[in-house]
Image (cartoon, rainbow, N blue to C red; front, side):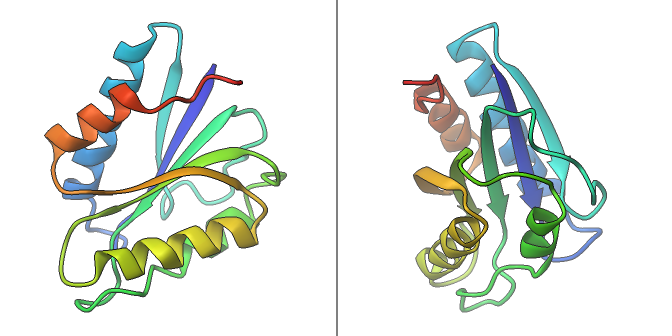
Length: 143
């Protein structure tokens, strides 16, 4: 099974904390089943990446504002240019930072559903240990 983790920091150069969460998610997913192929992509640097070959897509971002609710515009831009993603199963997550993270998660979920992705689950990830545990329990196999 091919799994893709997409992440979008607030700005193009800021990606260390969010990248650590993605790495922890990938480790958890891989330990769940050794036959998963997990790839991680930054939405700023991998513009034009085609997602049609992936079975499951995880999408994460940071809030654009301190009070939450907004997500980087790059999320929508990337997904519009990613080819046929309609009907793909996905997981949405945001990094717990600032106030009102749930509002940011809701905005991200709306952006994913607008592009036709089938949202299976969502989460606010506080740290890399929680991200690892989430990756281990996330059910991505086709049912």
